[in-house]
Length: 118
Image: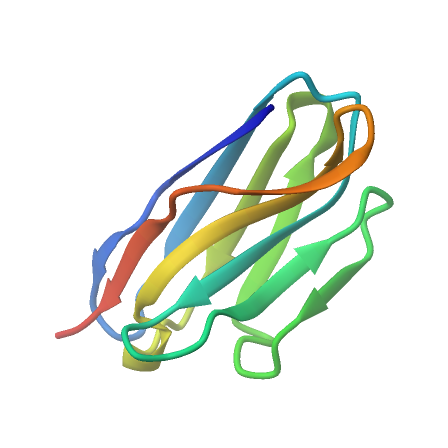
């Protein structure tokens, strides 16, 4: 079992910043990919950013240049620094991991709400 707990969401004005964190715990042998997804009401869940165990990153076009994903492998922590936030970034942000427990499997967190509004 893997538990993912997100934190750092909240209400922010357009142009503001937030830093999301995700703590992974449980019987983890190793973590492969970690990622942030988001889902707004009435919309499909979409990938925001992902990072491999080696540090390679991918971003959705809509957040490139504004968001930065990072991880601390030793602590099984994942972060998302979000700058220049826009109202369209409003969504529930969910942490995802593909971890070896010991076999590779997918796990999701409960999410943290981000609301961008004046």
